[in-house]
Amino acid sequence: MKNKSFSATNSLGSGSNVFLRLFLLLVACFLPLVGLSAQVSNEKFILQAEDMLRISFPGAPELDTQLQIRRDGVISAPIIGEVLAAGKTPSELESELSKKFENQLVSNEVMVVVLESHFTYYLEGEVRNPGIIESFRQLSVLEAIIAAGGIDKTTGKMKSVVVIRRKGEKYQHFELDLAAVIDGKKDGAFVLESYDIVSVPQRVW
Image (cartoon, rainbow, N blue to C red; front, top):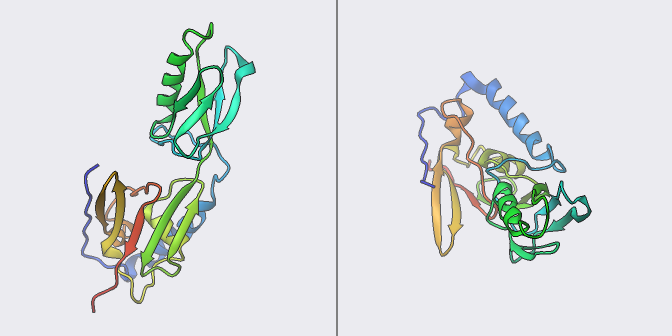
């Protein structure tokens, strides 16, 4: 994934879009509360440790089960035993399970549904409540900031929010202009991955 850098000339304090900003912020406040117990079906979703899954066998419903991905990323499936699940999409896990059950069942069709997931984010800098944000679904940067009480408008800088993401032994840095997003000058939400760090810098006066 390439680093993204957004830029804009208008600041968050522009009065012409104040009502639009207020509406977006109110919507963002409620978004983390929506679908906490809903099934996760987005195929871009990557399975991770502690996700709760339902695995169904249309041709052998007696094998249907609910299980949790262990901390080591593995599930213990009926008959075939341990299978690495973390890091795969639900469809990829379905395909792998189907292959493993090919010689075990007359019908090897398998369905995987994510019943519950857990995401942890870290927010630091000029947010009202820095610390850990936990959610049952993936959040965008803006949603995570709102969940942390929002940016301190006196000291926080919306135009240079930084996301730090660990990939193996390396760290990726993404600089985002959320002021441009709120003003409607940039489209698309930057979706966080679990354990991302969101850093809101201080204004330079």
